[in-house]
Length: 447
Image (cartoon, rainbow, N blue to C red; front, side, top):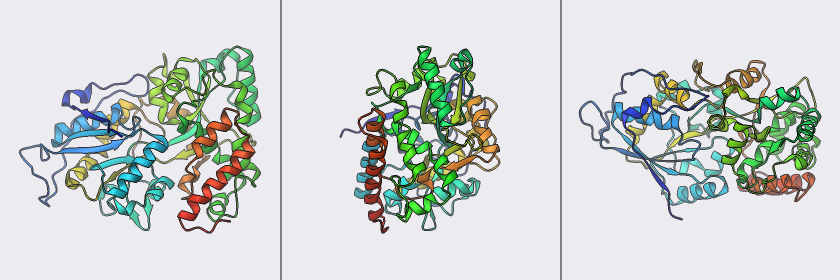
């Protein structure tokens, strides 16, 4: 497959010029540049210690965003290094590409990849550098660190904020029809019926970009854990399955309740289409990772038109949010530019650079950097709607941060059940079989 290379011609003037509508705006001063490491592995010159160094990195379009580019532009201005990005195609294709490159030793200097179970799948010690002794690690909260630590080695550093698998919705439709945020699944379905009766598209479904169809299933985990607190351990050990725990099966059958409420182009629609549909009110609800908020807000007339709530369960008094730890920066242990990468990341976690990132791009959720507060420019969907769940203690890490076991064909199953091509119960049983393969590969004794 031909590699798609996008050069980041990052002049310093871009630092103040990359501003998106709604979720944030750039407002950052200058700070002192970190000093180069004394190992001698990088050639340095003048006031920009890494001038002439090009760092190649790999990540998805969501990570190669205006905020990342703005911070990289600032790093180029201060430290001298330049950046070249190879775009990850996403989904299972991207998974397979990185696994192949990991096995062959063909990694870029650094990259953005998942934390949690996806990191376990890679056997990261083969290619990623253990950064346990880097000072930046002290800035990361414990929940994040647990998601990038394997056998005592810390491999990752947060690329962005936390996020959630949730319902992103278009508030003007709720205001027009007098709807309230639903705190149970039955109330959510009732809202969808009222929206359909009013001629609106209640739920957007992106069958043309299958990774996104998983979010209803994965984002429902708060509701499983609320009634089955040991589910993660039981699932890891093979003593609980999606097909034989009622609340877990329900995560699959919820798709069946929505079949009549989906967009007409549900089998072909992409994530980009979803960003536009929710931002403009062409559809009312979308089960999606909140990493899409800044992109949705690019299409919104008013940032306050967009809101977030957790996937409803059956207990109105315990309506919570399933949280994802950020995608993470990982460093190739074979890179010839480790000192330059370290200097870049030291800059990346300064208040100056974080304000620049979040002020330019926005945030997907509360930050996992200790003591750091998001700028006031961050949209209300994050600062108000999501923050409420965190403040009330009604959050739960997604299963992939509590168990290393995750099936490889999940997105194909969620797409099929979402399109009405199989039942939720059938999908639950198939997913258990798919996860068994992962469990066996990881050395667990599943029956």
